[in-house]
Image (cartoon, rainbow, N blue to C red; front, side, top):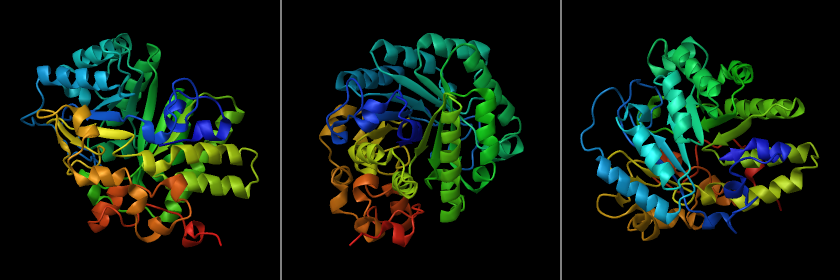
Length: 390
């Protein structure tokens, strides 16, 4: 996860300690971080999105964790000291006890965030989310109007999402936009950036597509289109800085964005170049990503390296606490992810940005080739850009 606002403007952001070792409570190294846990508390969803990594839809999925099991997970995560808990789905607000679960987690001292499609947030629910104390509510938006509705599989989904943003802002709940970069959304990117401005949205995460679940059927975006999208986002961040507009902007699931940013700053002779390089070297990109700085628990209690890798089963919280599964791994992949540079192959293994990018996003390589250590097919850098100098 690359925080463009921090890197381009040096304006402090809430998670700088975790990402860049800045501020009070920062770990000494990125590798010392305990994981942010993405917990898919239900697989049930009221939409059917084209890119859904969990292949969710509007039906029941037997075997989801009971209330007592959910509380036990929270107790363990709190005792272990994870830095954040992201409640996701499916659609987490479709879970009958999501508010009780969030309140219980807050009571245990956890920093709780929410990832939602927004269609179930009315004014009263926004007030409850604020009262519970969610640090952040992320609402997915994948285009303007009919583009979003098509992507989400339901007419009227866009208007519901817009209303959710406005309800959250009206009650003072910090809210952000989450978007996956696909051929659909890149074509609407400037309109989406305009929408963020017009609505006064606090935070935006641009995800690079990870082909999981129904997302495997989406056509791959060309390297030129990805580069153009990232450049458009960078340009808007810089404009917002000049205008003193408050919005935290991040790109997610493509550590190569860090190398691209450094190449741009080098070409521009930017005075921020060395400071940005230092922060990115501390972060390490994929070196501190899935399996280290992020983890996933699915609705059945199975633990995975991240939410996009749900067919790699590291263990079940019904059998062992998450903290034990994470610190005493039985699956070889977890150990390999924590020593990834020794396993990287192809362009990623030979890349000069390995200390900055950390070898890209491994699940993309695994899905494309069946080998987690082959080159990341989502990398848009040219061969010349990745070639070692000298």
